[in-house]
View 1 (cartoon, rainbow, N blue to C red):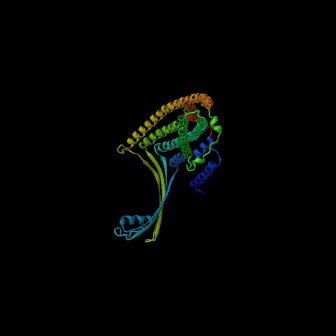
View 2: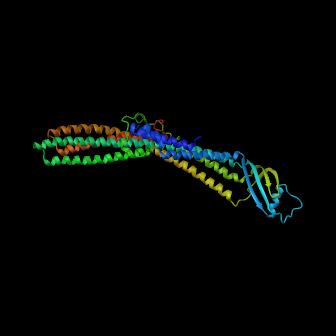
View 3: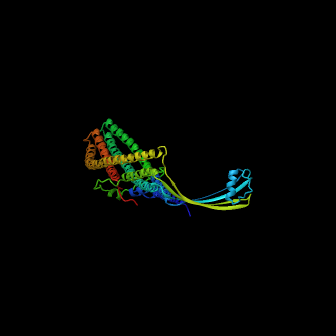
Amino acid sequence: MPSRFSLHRVAAATLLCFTALSLSANPWTARQAVATALANNPDAEIARQRLIAAEAMIEQANAAWLPQVSLSGRYTETNSPMMAFGSILNQRAFHFGLDFNQPGRIDNLNATGTVGYNLYSGGRATAGKKAAEAGARAAQEDLRAAHHQLANGAIKALLNLRKAREAVGAVEAGVRAYEASITNARLRFTAGQMLKADLLSLEVQLAQTRETLTTARHGAALAAQAFLFVLGLDPVGAESVDLAPEDPALTAMITPEQTDFSGRPELTGLQERLHAAEEMVQVARGARRPTINAFASYQYDQGWKLNRHGDSWLAGVAVDVNLFDGGQTSGKISQATAELAQVKQMLRKARLGIALEVEQARLAHQAALERLEVSAQTVAQADESAALSRARFAKGALLTAELIGAESRLIEARMRRTLAEADERIALADYHRALGLLPFATP
């Protein structure tokens, strides 16, 4: 039967193949990007392994309620009077003719089986199990927090890529507008209706816009690599990343109606760590209580020098009481109490910080909505102004500098509109994350 680790590697390899195929075949949507990041990003795998480690701590804690069974065996030869005499007795080979000072060379094969069971440990076993269970629940919340972070990161990376590419489109539109204006300007210059300086001004502006376009394209290429990085994919071949023109999941994201962040996984995880710290104080205090253990053992001894053998058993109950340990237990109690106080303050700090984060996210989204509304009006006005300016310039009724200004304002307005659209969705995703919510249900 294949091991869990082997199955995990096969699943990971299958996922990589699937995502590689989807990278080259299907356009990415926000939902697909989030699902890939949750399954493939190293941060998600790290959180999953931490959860597995925390669950293993529960298995270790449960061992306190199970008997401890051990087997041991050894073969010895000796001429030491004390050790030889013990072996002789265990082999049932004693007789009064033995010379206790010179017993000779004695061998012994010993096999021993021991069973031990803890009857009472001062509450340490119970507290340790509760602490381990709280730690596992905290690790589960850490995994959920990692999923929220990755979902938010995947959405932001996708929107940043879309924003960068749409910015490229806006600058390309500006380049085409300048090229059309220069074509018209050259005809007017040939007809003697335009000064050479005005034509050169348009050509310089076109060159500057093309330079801006080159920078925008480089930014889009980097945004594509960042997108694949968040998804946990190889950034090689980022130029082939294709985004879906319509993304229903992004469009369907709505503003949360409530501002309750009590379900934030970071908070829930700290609350579980608080429970674990409380139980660790009980573990430390349990060292002052007695420990009671029951035990039983059976042993068999065989010797070939004397050609004898024998068996024996032992059973009983042991009670251990720690009367004085030099202050070690007191120190552990003080340490556990201080760690509990630290977790309490960490939880208080987290609540205050998250409350501030939620308010910042809410205000940021509100500002993004207002900016989006203003940018839409600005684009409409700039578009109409540029169209009128081109018509007047074609008739010779507008100076070149005025046309350049109109085109520059249109390019700037379109870019601001593009940025505002993406930033509003990014701000909304941040608002969801601040409240401990996923933007949409993940597969």
